[in-house]
Image 1 (cartoon, one colour):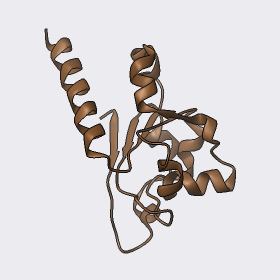
Image 2 (cartoon, one colour):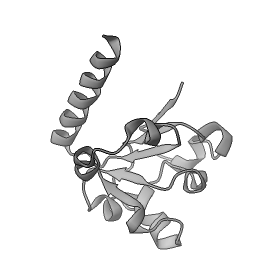
Image 3 (tube, helix red, strand yellow):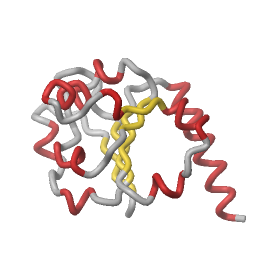
Image 4 (cartoon, one colour):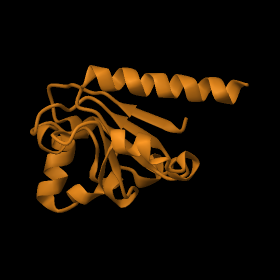
Length: 130
């Protein structure tokens, strides 16, 4: 599969359950929805060597989720590498070009955003079926 969805909420360190294998993650669409506090992480450091951008739904995701706040604190990620999904969706960016690489979407749980993305994915799926 080309999509790697991570939604783990565990009592032990989340990273222990997520592979830190660059080759496993290379070329995948990674959707992370499980870490919702600055102490929680589910995405391994290998991702920062594979992707240039992180797509987020809200700016406070960089503070709220350990998947973003910890790599920012460690210098592995800079905030200029984050892209608001609303800006991306309005930009007219080449989706095929972005999808050709490793992509990383981090959600911190805004339900309205989830509905908008689901609608966009459904529309794209229907386009491809025609």
